[in-house]
Image (cartoon, rainbow, N blue to C red; front, side, top):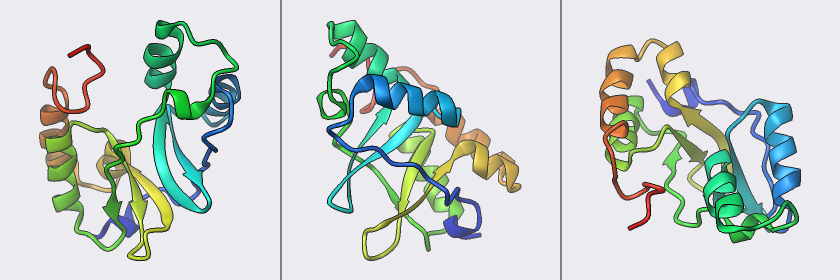
Length: 145
């Protein structure tokens, strides 16, 4: 199965100049914990509710701080034509629960989550990926290093 068969295609994006308050409200309306950040039609980062809490509020930034001040810029992604099993292994290795999905022209076309994959019948592989993701630490840990 290909990523394009499972991904969510109706993805809301945010701009690096939006405020944390705007993005938090958007996340609440969407019932989402992550938003891709795009500038000039290119993916430049990801922001999560955890980024807002830890890098924003936790570091004393107020609701008017900008997305660019707390977003992750080292964005890992996958392509829409990749095999789901390969992407699941990659997610486990990276310790992430979701990845933006790009086409081969590097345009954002969707987002894929462990939930998407579990719902599409990849439960065993999803469980393996979650096991890797759930281990403490890792490259994308929010803990202080």
